[in-house]
Structures are given as structure tokens and as C-alpha cells.
Image 1 (spheres, rainbow, N blue to C red):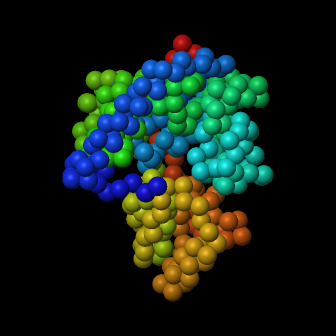
Image 2 (cartoon, rainbow, N blue to C red):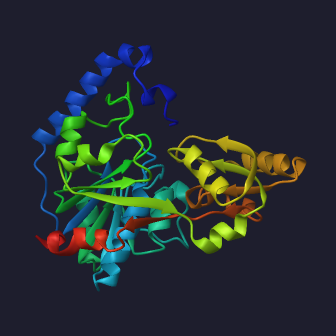
Length: 324
């Protein structure tokens, strides 16, 4: 889905949906109280967020896995596989699976460390352990109570924060804010803190600061190029702003819903628009894996990664706490 604009502010639409927001918020908390979490076979680091999409959760999960790999650990990713048809549990094979099978995020995760897709998170954790994992990086699933988490890092976007602080459908929150904040062992505040969130978050748990940035080489590669940019992610505007920060000139911007599955006709239409405006197509890594393989030629991709400052803060946060 594409996040409604009114999720970012208090307005009549949000107030109109307040009863539904209250009911869904209560249901989310009740689920957490009624379900007894299963103990994981290996320690679980959960990278989650409190809102629907767009915070930078997957790049932070990748950064966490790289910290664990550098420490000599054997991390496996665990994902629900949003947008994929396969329920799992199964180990993702990028040579065999497509985004329609597993969702887009697991395909990106599997480039860094083995990835398991499972709607049943308990079964997925057991498969990861059976396949050789000595720890699990859970991409999303903070609000899923089925599997106990050893350490929980909540990703927060510094520009939009918690929007109007209402629960869906009246706002972006997955559960009431106070409840969500209580789940965190730490926060990854991504991007400029435009809402003065750091002090507020620090009252609940340690705050790590991060940015989502392309490499210097990738940024230089796009400088001065005319681009027709398109993206189907939580907040396409963040991608467009990153391209402009690299020095690219955007002749057009096309935003799609998060996890949008591209049809060949859509890509062909985008390509025709690019030719007509003397521009090149550019998109995100997540979008590229959702484009039919035969349609990918000539489309530029700008990868971004989560960078923490100071450099060792994520490593220090995880430290021995993952086994505590």
C-alpha cells in the first residue's frame, strides 16, 4: 500500500478513523498478552519499526548482519517474505527464487548472509538453526509475539518520526506508541533528527544514530546524469532526494506503492518516457528485484547502506547482549 499523506499530520481523516485505530491498537496489544512466545533455538536480534514502512529497516538489518559476520558469527536472516507467495519455511536461493516467490527484501538479504522466509517465525528460526545459524537477524516482526527476541532494535525515521502518532488506519503506527516504545532495547534513529526525537527516545532506551547513504563511487557515477527516477518503497521521496544529493538531474519522478510488482508493460512505458525526455531510468535495489529480468537492461540502480556514527556504535550495542 501507499501511505496516505494524512498519516503525517492531525486532520479530519485521522479523527474520523479514530474508532478503528483504537480497536486495532487494542487488538495488537491483546495479541501480545495472549500469545506465549516460543524460546528461540539461537539468539535473535530483531530489527523492527513502529510504523508502516519507510524507516530503513532492511539496510539496518544488513548492517547488523555484517557486524556479526565480522565478529566470526554465523547469522541467518529471518523474514516473513512480504509480497511473496511462498509461506515457507524455506531458505532463499536468489538463483531460483524471484520476488514473487519470497518478496523483495529476502533476495537482498540473501546477498549478505543466508536468509529464511517463513510466515511461521518459530518454524523459520528452527530451520535457520538446523541450517547452521548461531544467531538470527529478524527483519521486521517486532509486533509478532510468536518468537521471543533476545535483543530488539527499533528503527525510526528522523524526518517523519511517528507521523500523527495514531494507530492504523488513522495513522502509521502498528500499535499504540507507548506500547511500541516499551518493546525497544535500543533505537536506530535514521537521518536528520528534524522532530527532536533523540531525547524522547533516549528516555526509553539507548539511541544510535545512522544515515542511509550510497557509496562515494555510486554517487559519482550518477553525477550530472538526466534521470527518470521511479521507486515502489515506503517513502519514494527519500530515494529521489538521495539521487539529487548525488548531483543527478531528475526530469521526472514516479512513485509506486511499497513492494509494487512491476509488469512488463509498466516498465516499457517508463522506458518510453525516458527516451522521450532524453533521460535514463534509475531505481532502487529493492525495486530492481521486482522488475522482470528481461526488462532490467539499461536501468541504473543506486544502492544505499546504513552507516552508524560513531562507526562502532552498532557493534557496541550488539556486543555480548545478543547472548545475554
